[in-house]
Length: 211
Ligand code: VGL
Ligand code: ZN
Image 1 (cartoon, rainbow, N blue to C red):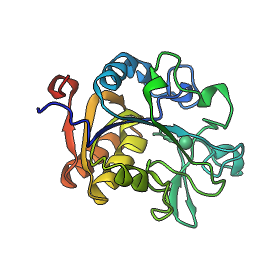
Image 2 (image 1 turned 180 degrees about the vertical axis):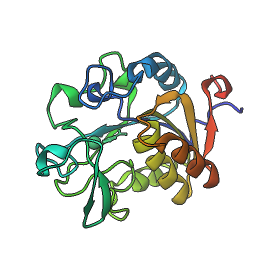
Image 3 (image 1 turned 90 degrees about the vertical axis):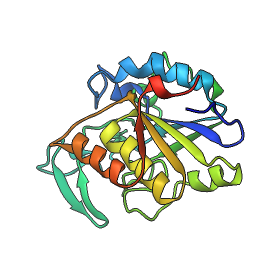
């Protein structure tokens, strides 16, 4: 692995928020375990961007707003199938805050997503309709940040969707797998790994990331 390039390299830290950690509303198993490693990657990365899942109360991805539906089921919304989740990452709530141990102060940008009541947004780049942009691609391009390293929660949802979109948009994209944890809903982790591999996302681990 070559040393980090201060002109082109950015670390994208996906959704390291209380609700995705043990004790949170949509806890990812071992979600908090990645924090020390993410912090080391933040320390050695020339540029850092964070994403923050940021839903209004009664967001359309919450099972609680759909009569007769339970979390982890699926419904059809105008833009396609949408998995239903427990209420999580509500704007301004404790659960939406970054994990206490996350060394977030170095971040140059925090991109919030999922704030439109009618559309969910797993990806840091596009909402789940696949066409509404978050603005992140334009930001990165304007700054010449072409080489992206992704870490965070959850591997098979927000990390994978972000990585797939990053590749589709032409960014050099790698995911540090041991700095991620998965929800793994009905084989979603293996599906995500296969799709990332097929689309040219580099799956790596922290031992091969340059300090
Ligand atoms: C996420 C489900 C719902 C994630 C966010 O960060 O992976 N998953 N909202
Ligand atoms: Zn969410």
